Amino acid sequence: MASHPFNPKRPIPLGEFAADIERRRAETGVTDVPRNAGNRRTDSKRALLAAIENAGGRW
Image (cartoon, helix red, strand yellow):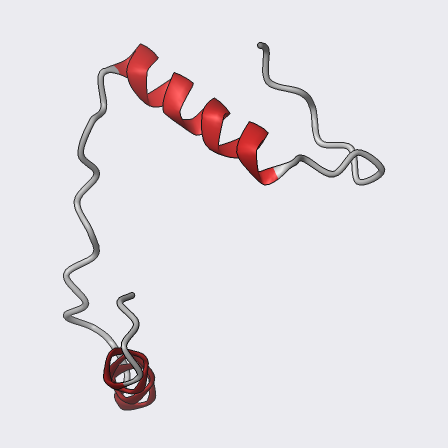
């Protein structure tokens, strides 16, 4: 499947989007993308992430 140009009238189903990302990762050999270390987060962002974690989520 080839990538399609952006078309706001054609929403991309989530499954198709995920499959396209996995296909591109396999083609490039990129298997593990490092996460942002978060060294420059604002206090409000740190509080938001802490609240998400306390609610049982993981960002």
